[in-house]
Amino acid sequence: MKSYLIIIVFFSSIVSSYAQEIIKEIDTITVPSVYELKSEQWNDWKKIEDAWKIEYYKILKEQKIKMSCSGCESVFMDVVLSVDNNGKLSYYKLIKSKKCEMEFTKGLEIKFMKWFFTQKFPQSLFNTKFQVRLGTSLKC
Image (cartoon, rainbow, N blue to C red):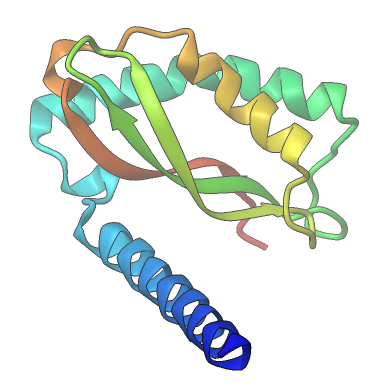
């Protein structure tokens, strides 16, 4: 009887894990990229992004990251942002990150996202989810 329970629990955990991965994949597919936003939303996002870039350059300096074609070509995060009905960032979902040739540490991820949690998004972005790239890559 114990072996049946163990087998059932084992297979349940596998199915649950697989279902969660499918849900994550579907969630990412249905979220529009920033360039698919309506004109007003895109313009409002660009203002936010421009303001955030000041923070971005501070982070690069603080982390002693110097971007160049012969060294570190990319420092970015692809994320899904979810803005609530009050214009606050309710959550984000990391899709991909790259610092030079490595993924971000959790600490760097938090530094990138902290600023967004302090901001009030414009009304055009209330109740929206969209995917953005935070940071840059050099064209080498």
